[in-house]
Length: 300
Image (cartoon, rainbow, N blue to C red; front, top):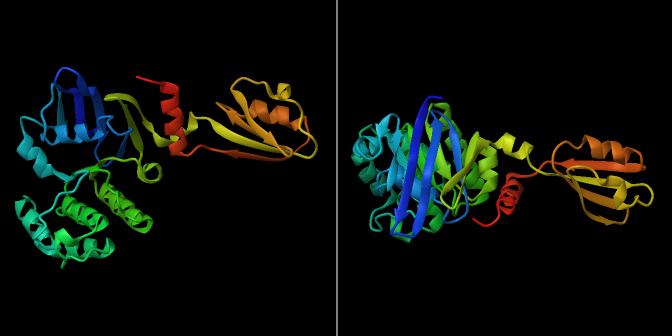
């Protein structure tokens, strides 16, 4: 894989007791939309800040497009568009003045027609001062600033935080377009629906450790499915469905719900012998996958 983002043994500790990131080894390909997942305090924002040299690692190294994130930090920042988790703006500047200010700091030219088009898509009024904007509108302005000069790498910390569902979809469309032109999109998120919608792969952090990297489809395929069987008559007892990987969740009014870890073929064969009237099988959402993942992991 031609890596746009690469870390090797990247670690960050605070004092003698707080381990924020523990030997992160990760590669994200050029043109990839990569989701970085984990609960609060897992190390997601710490990773992004280390990539931008906003904080220094305790061990290990990182690079973006072949540039060392610490040694070549100025070049790295010129290659990236960054949206922090807590967007800070100059309250007295209008949206347009904010765009012009940050645009003047970029090495690549900012196209005015691109600014207008993005502002329209994001339903953002650039004449209003940043200080009077709602959280959602400040988020939109932060996104616009990150996207200004079409950087080759986007580092986005919770990019759709505070946005309504319609605007979330618009942001997803914009990020897909950025990836299609070759940009790498690396973002952290708690919104499982957006990760499921646009990501090719995800990395899962837990207590500062990278515990899984996999395509979204693989994660869902490895996870437990829900199977709901509706019987024409009274269902047989639980002993009839004691099969490897199968667990009965509940039963009521001729309906039995199962949790199946792995292939459902054995359960389907068993159900076929007992007058099943209707059968429903549902793949887990990524949100369910994540909940199950952390429940299985247990305490650190």
